[in-house]
Structure formats: structure tokens, C-alpha cells
Amino acid sequence: MKIYLSKINESWIIDRIRQEWFENNRNISTKFIYKSDVIWIISPWLWRNLPKTQLAKKKVICSHYHFDFDIFDKKDFYELDKYVDEYHVISNKTKDQLRTLTNKKITSIPFWINQKLFFDINNKSQLRKEFGFIEKDFLVGSFQRDTEGSDNVSPKLIKGPDIFIEKIRELKLTHENLKVVLAGKRRNYIIKELKKLDIPHYYFEMVDTKTLNKLYNLLDLYLVTSRIEGGPQAILECAITKTPILSTDVGVAGEILHSDSLYDPENFHKAKTNVDYAYNSSLRHKLPEGMNLFKDMIFKFYEN
Image 1 (cartoon, rainbow, N blue to C red):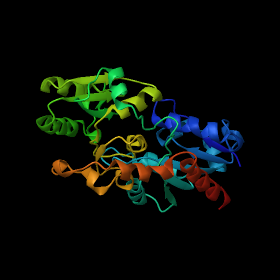
Image 2: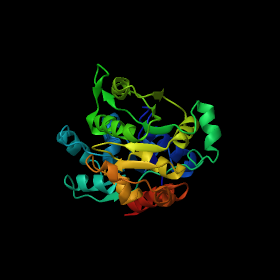
Image 3: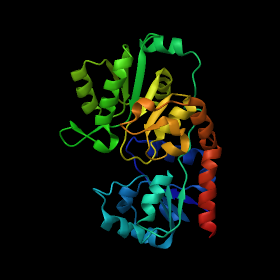
């Protein structure tokens, strides 16, 4: 059996997932779609780039991450669905969404986490010195995109940047030395709002995984404020690095984090981090165990 993973090339987490898959599964993978037995559409929004003649005669499994039904293109979904034999999602919440659209088999498995790239760094004091922070700084992180539109200033509301600013304002009341650490493209909206509040922020636009791991280890708190999510993968990255995290109840959050670490905007003050619970929940998704879950899924799919 040979598996072909669709390409993306958007400098996104899925690119890293695809690369790690090939590095660890060369014997069952091919970069040529015509040589494949199974086509794994890992980037469904780019499915039209794939030759329909190949989709029609191969076994096809397709990953979906989340559905924003306010902008959902149902026609495009069902055009692709004609070629799909089975679906994969990365959270049970997305599975529930997808079930409203299809009766085909759906398997829910979060993407694996590479513990060689993301891990707990013991010497936090030295790490803070490296980045110019001091012990008493209360560092809150967010590593994602929060802005969209051609003007590059409109908030990407499904990511909840307005909620993030609201929670930062609340945290500032109890943490005098609060500072915000940002990473990722298009952070314009949050940066603009932080400047209005006169809250110090430090922006690392696009960093390599070594630096990203260090940024997680700097933090006193990572905040997920999204209204809709597939993962996000940051939840698993926080879990494996033992970074304290609070999240809205989106995507995979309820499967990895303790229920006390989930909040809605009204009860944020009651939420509590639980590093040990999150870390233990993440262990089954580290390499090689986490990737083996996908291999098992695809082998069962191929054999049926």
C-alpha cells in the first residue's frame, strides 16, 4: 500500500504534519499521486488541485478541521464528497459537525505532537534572561493569526481576538507586571488594541520550532479565545511543554484539558490551569504513538 498526502505549502501546521509523516513513513508513502493506493486529502480547501481521474479510481480519505457554517460552501463540500470514501477529523466537536453533512465513516484523532520539538525546559530563569524578561513578569501568550481582510486590520472573529483583549484587560487588574507574547502572522488587530491599553507586548512574527518551544516555556499562561476551532494544535503543544493554558470549549480542548481549564467569557475568573492533567492527556499523541493511530486508521480504511 502506498499513501499520497495532498500538498499545502502555506507555512502552516499541516505542512509540518505532512513533512513528519513522510520522514517517518517513507516505506508506505509516495509523493506521486498516480503511484498511490490511498489518497489522503489533508488540505480539503485545495482539493480541486488534485486530478479527478485519480480521485475517481483511488481510495480517498479526507481530513476536516472545523466548519464555520456562516460561510460554509455546501456545494463545494458535496462535489468533493462524491470522491471521498471516509473522513478524518481532529476533534469530536468537528465530528459532530461533519455528521450533519454525511453518513460516511468519520474517525476522530488529534494530530500527533513531536516531543523532540516541543518539550518542557527546566531552567525557566535562564530562558527569561535570554529573552529579556524578569522573574516577576506575568507573561501571557497567543501564537496564531487574529487578523484578516485585504486591509489587514479586520479581526478574525472565529479566533476571538476581541475576547483575548477582554481577558487581558481582566488579567491586568490582578497582574501588575502583565506582558503579552505574540507569534504568528497577522497579529495586527491585537497589537493595535494592546497599544490602546498601554499593555507591553512582544511580537515574534514567524519563528522556527526551536524558538516557538522556548516561547511556550516562557509563559505563565497561554490563552485560547477562539469561537470555532479544529484543534488548535497549540493545546497539544502547551500540554506537552507543561505550559499553563486556559481555553474556550472549542475543538480538541475538552479532550485534552481538565474541565476546570475550560471557560466561557462570563466565567473566565473561575477557570484554573491544570498542567499535569493536560500533560498526561497529551502522552498518547506523542511520537510514535500518536502517528501510529493514523497508520492504524489508514490501514483499516485500505483493507475494508
